[in-house]
Length: 94
Image (cartoon, rainbow, N blue to C red):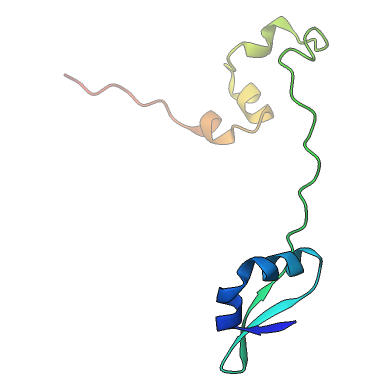
């Protein structure tokens, strides 16, 4: 359905209800379309609430997983080539 700006201002609530039903509502000024009202698709159902500790105890890892990488070969193996190839910076003389 097409409405003028004046008609839309006068009865905007009715236009919104019309758009909610799926009808296309076009607002025109001087015979030219300037706006279209359309219903917004409903958001998806909310996801299940996250629970702290749900997977506690289900993961196993080695004790050395948090051990710092020390050798250049280890750094390169994990993709830290830049660090492996960097030269140590010496402290400036005081």
